[in-house]
Length: 289
Image (cartoon, rainbow, N blue to C red; front, side, top):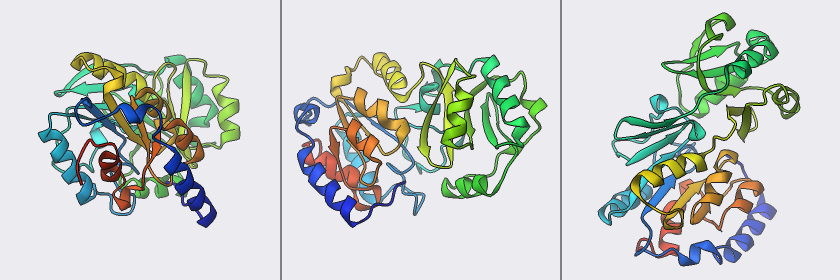
């Protein structure tokens, strides 16, 4: 989540009025068939840890129109704990690393074992910097500090089980949250050729398999449902949403997102707490006010 000042707000308003002149103009209520939503900072407020009432109402109305609704998140499915009782048609999780429809995994991709082992060495088992490893059946933390504590509170999550480096070695990891600086990121990722990073928070980056992204997950799910990319919308606010916003027929960036995210979008709406999702859906005629 990015807080913007008065001058940035003015720039955002000017930019928003200029957006929506490309892909989104072709999106109408009659031809939109699917919408993908990021969770944190998009569907769910960082302030309340809930989906706003206006967004829940919009989701129900979209479903009544027969539009397929999907989640696209960096979280593993096991910690998607903030969507209430609303059931989505499918889930792109772990930044495209695992895709789930009807409770079944339709696609998965894990980090190369050599890369995972290299990260364990470079982090010195968590002593140099903490890491949270998303494994087959658990999230495991090596190391730990106040930054990790703050991030867990921000995401309204319980602290993962703390383990030793040896407990991770040889295990299959689908994603790693690495709490290192951008400078360390550049250095370490040179040693992990089968992996890439996607950063949506200053405190950490998501390490995922090379070739994975939310857009890859979207492609897998859209193919399963026989829906073209031009027939879908996507909403996001973080760096890990950039590929998704570019891939969608209409990519919507939430208000307050970074300049890089806004540049990838076709339109910039208001933020999650100011009914940004509903406003964009109304703007393009997908829903009526």
